[in-house]
Length: 195
Figure 1 (cartoon, rainbow, N blue to C red):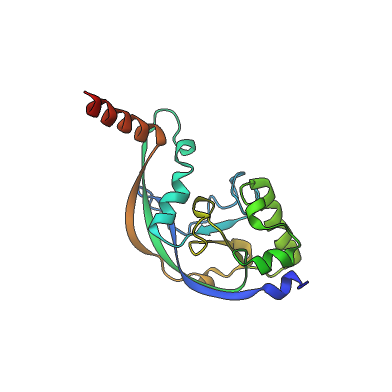
Figure 2 (cartoon, helix red, strand yellow):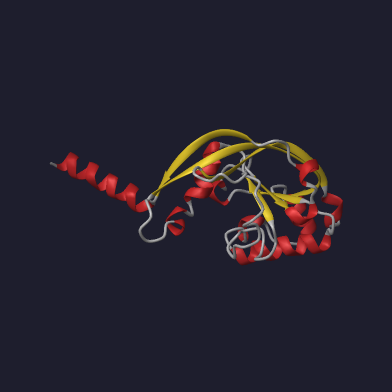
C-alpha cells in the first residue's frame, strides 16, 4: 500500500468562490476563516478557503445551506457575487482519486463523505500526516454523481497568499431562494393549474 505522502501532487487552475453580493470585502478575505463548526473539510479553528468548479456547483453547494443562512426577518433571497480565482498549489491530495483514499487506509469515500465529523476527521488526519499539505481536492457533496465537478479546499495557514492565488475576477451575481419560497411558488402554480 502506498504512503499517503506519496500521493501529494501540485495543482493549478481556475476555481470559483463566492461572497454576499452586497459585501465590499475581498472574496479572499480572511476574517471569518476557521470560525464555522460545520465546514465539511475543516474543524473549528482550521482556516480554509473553499472553492468549486462552476456556477452550477456554486448554486448546488450554497443552495444546500440557504435555509440555515436566513435568520428570522431576513429576505428569503440571497444574492451571491461569484469570482473566478486562479489557484496554484505545490502540494495537494486528490480525494476524488480512489488510490488516494486507499493510501489513507480509509473505506471508499462514498461510505463516509456525508458525515461532517468523518470528513473533518479525515482532513485533520491528512494535515497531521502531511505537514506541508496545502489543500485537498474533494468530491462535491451536492454533486456526487459528477466526480469531475470537485471542490478545492485550501488551508490558509499552509500557503503564501501571493504565491497561491491570482487576482480574483468578478464573474457574475447569482440569486438563491430559500426552499420555502420555492415550495410556495410551486404551490401557487399548482393552485393556478387546478383552478
